[in-house]
Length: 339
Image (cartoon, rainbow, N blue to C red; front, side):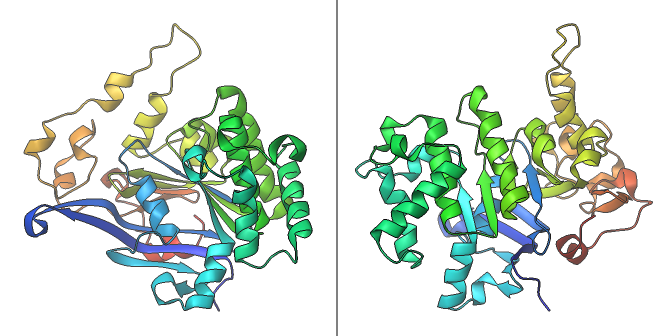
């Protein structure tokens, strides 16, 4: 029996086509399998540099894009096969928080509109007074004073306040999963910890699972239980956050960690070494490991078939031929179990 409230990508791919007769194509997400939610609420981070496919994967998980390969399931049901009632349930139970909260608001409406509209759409409030009470409670939950927030326009709030209003909006619908796409990248450093703490409490106090999409591996370490590392639209390492971030195994994950500046000015950053290309990428065929052009440990075997995910230990798997002595982790296992 399918587990309720579980969001799964099963070998999901997204290929974009452009040009005359779609002669040009770009694979943004390549056969990604993962699972979030279910009986036990968790925080799962999806980490990678710009262009790694994080936002495209988010749009697939939210049903904004239909995958060109594979499937997205919620509570065991393929999103593409859902009827109207099932899709409405999915829309209510899987909520999103985006990078730029200002773009989400209509500047002609007060922020009240963003809070009241979903309550009316899903019939969650009997009347206007009940809707306002629910909105006030949600704002208080995320650390905002209702009397200082309601009745104001988006431009009258700070970036951190707008982001917390969007978290409150998501909470109003009592979701099972919240997908947060770079939720703290456009707010002051002083507010990042406040917003991340708010998101962290959602799992602890409300039992909500969180998908945290970020390029900042440091904040992923602070809040996540599990981490998926994306490169070129492919999962290159996955597992428990503690294991992946403190003892990275894939060369790309190691490069991400090495690129984090040390607080000690005498410690070199190694940024150039971490991103150095061993050869001209244009001269290397598209086949093989996607990280091969930049990998300092590339081998002849890396030019053949792309590496599958190999189990490195009980806590993680890595898509690298350095670990080909380990067992292959299937897409189905990745989607239905926790490493």
